[in-house]
Image 1 (cartoon, rainbow, N blue to C red):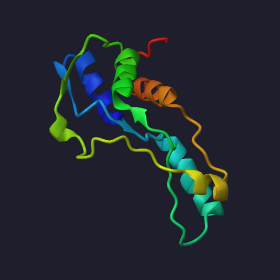
Image 2 (cartoon, rainbow, N blue to C red; image 1 turned 60 degrees about the horizontal axis):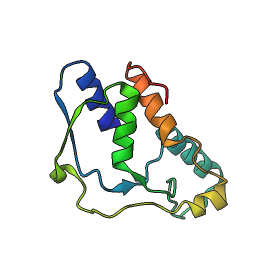
Image 3 (cartoon, rainbow, N blue to C red; image 1 turned 180 degrees about the vertical axis):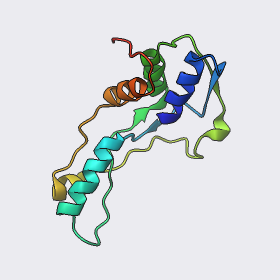
Image 4 (cartoon, rainbow, N blue to C red; image 1 turned 45 degrees about the vertical axis):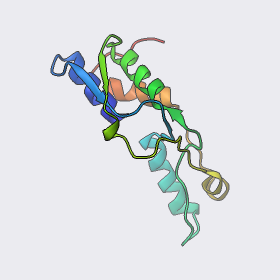
Length: 132
């Protein structure tokens, strides 16, 4: 998401003609860094020593939709997007983690939606955030 936002900023500022992205027809488990930080605090307080935990949302989100949301929020819907599959992780399958253990042991679950994450990242980059 950060890569999409930084490239969108450069497009809006006229410093880049197109966005270079990997494969967009995959889905990934995306968790807001603020949620990750809260998960770490919960793990320090309630996690069991030596136990592995997945800090994740538990759902795969399509990268094409994430890119579209970034472009809309940044106000550059007409941007040229070039897909360079070599920049994508080798796996073409959808990837989602399982947060069941951290939820059970620490009562943690993500608070921020992908829409909030995108909107806040675009705003933090100094770009306008279009109303949806």
